[in-house]
Length: 142
Image 1 (spheres, rainbow, N blue to C red):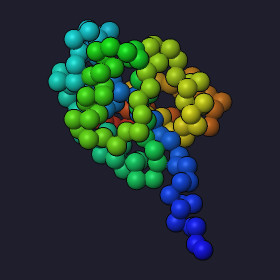
Image 2 (image 1 turned 90 degrees about the vertical axis):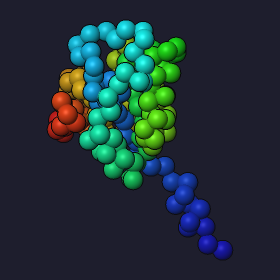
Image 3 (image 1 turned 30 degrees about the vertical axis):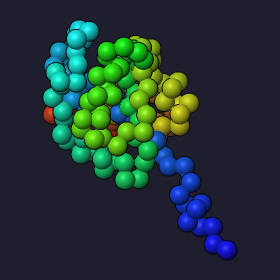
Image 4 (image 1 turned 60 degrees about the vertical axis):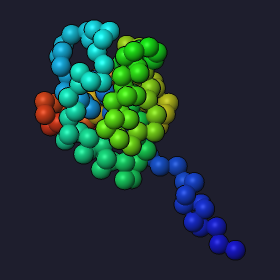
């Protein structure tokens, strides 16, 4: 009896994470705290990052790790945005403004895309950090 196909289907894939604000969309209020009515309809998708996310999804499971709160309208807007743009995201995590390092490490994330420089925060981990700039431009930092 051959079980190879079953084993391949259940094999755990690497996890790659993307920040939400300023990464999956153009930040319409850069450098400010977003108002409570900041819904998905206010956000302009960053097509280059969506393409990169879909490319990463071919070989990895994709999650979103955002500093937004884990409840209410702001979280709902992330879900709506991801659903509207049919992004292949397995799960959304919201840290409510807390550092992301422990969550990323605990989940076993291999690469994280963020518009905030997390070089110092991720130092000493095995997580590759990718700094995302204006217009979906990005560079691997570590």
